[in-house]
Length: 68
Image 1 (cartoon, rainbow, N blue to C red):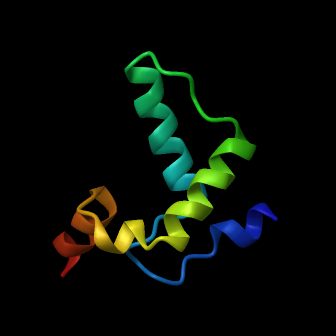
Image 2 (image 1 turned 45 degrees about the horizontal axis):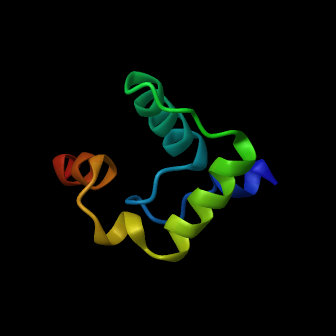
């Protein structure tokens, strides 16, 4: 199942591992409880399904704009 989540069909969508790592670093930085893998999977799926990464200005969108 984890391999399937790592497939990246759109450059603006981070892989699950990229997103999960970045979010948990931020949570740790601000003293928040990090996501478990199962919590992260649920949140990530919701974000992808809602097109969050395509609609929001975020670090993954800005990385791709810098490549062009």
